[in-house]
Image 1 (cartoon, rainbow, N blue to C red):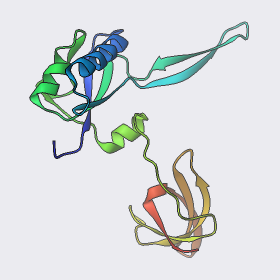
Image 2: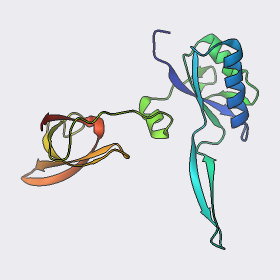
Image 3: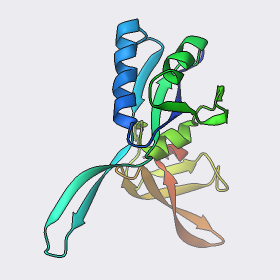
Image 4: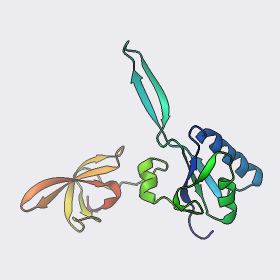
Length: 176
């Protein structure tokens, strides 16, 4: 267990996601596997429908029906625990015996985990770009959007001031 726990995707019968999640959580509790199976998640989104009569109804909808996400250390024990839950048909991966872990980028894009980024720069600060085709360029912070985890930086390219959007962690402050 020296490696970090990873998120894996268990495929379930459609409509069994909540039952599978509850069963996994109950099994983890009864077998005291909290240090090996850390979290179980069913990504949902809020949807608002407006009927023809103008009445709006908001409800939670599963983003990935038929799938349950499990954060765990992959061992023979944890694999068997998840695989033998009623309603689980297998893991997503090259074969059901070899589950493929989600990448950090996939996990954040799904909204399962939030990455907290400490922003130590403000609008007007000069920053250096750390990643991408503009890495090592410098620019001035024009806008910071914490909700979207983006920062707009004005960069001088080909003699023109051009606003470019980056992820909050793709830049670092060099002067304030």
